[in-house]
Length: 281
Image (tube, rainbow, N blue to C red; front, side, top):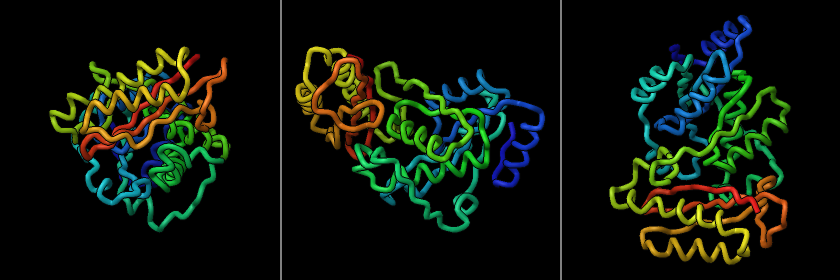
């Protein structure tokens, strides 16, 4: 497995790979890798000749300095696991390498970036879009793999690629869960033992909502979700939204034949967890 720290070195490697006619897959990450990331790597390995993974904690997508400081960094362990998965290239740049000078690009995604996560984390998705555009320009992948746990992020990356006419196929991958249903996340390791025991209640409530949606109104489903999580005083719902799956606009009433997604962010103690389920009526 190759490990590159600079953009120049990475581009040279990719240039050589492409000269051989190899197809390329790419998994962008911020490290602290878990089984969800590994599934992305495995899928990329199955569909491409050469697979790259980036490990870069992107400072401009954090709107709280303390969250950036607390983000887990496990680079040695990450590299060891990627090597075991036969990942071909790890791109692990410094902040100075990625941003030798400030990048003030502002993207307009027509409102996609202003609801849910965007509403509570202003500037977050612009930071995501900036770094993903940079990474795509460096790696030049044929396909790039993103988990559906970050459903709004996935939607915005698709919009970015379409907006800039970038020659990369975005491949969505199902959320990987723990046996008790908790969506795998780098943040889970910050939960206390007691918090970890009750965390699966978030997915249980979401799963029930997806099962009963055909017989309930949006208002009733929202009430149900709030009621379920109020059983746990350690939990604080930041938002729960049922949205059109295409443009993420919040809905007040269901229309038959349309697809929806229920998304939430919940503080469990000091740890912010996000999750979602699709709703097919």
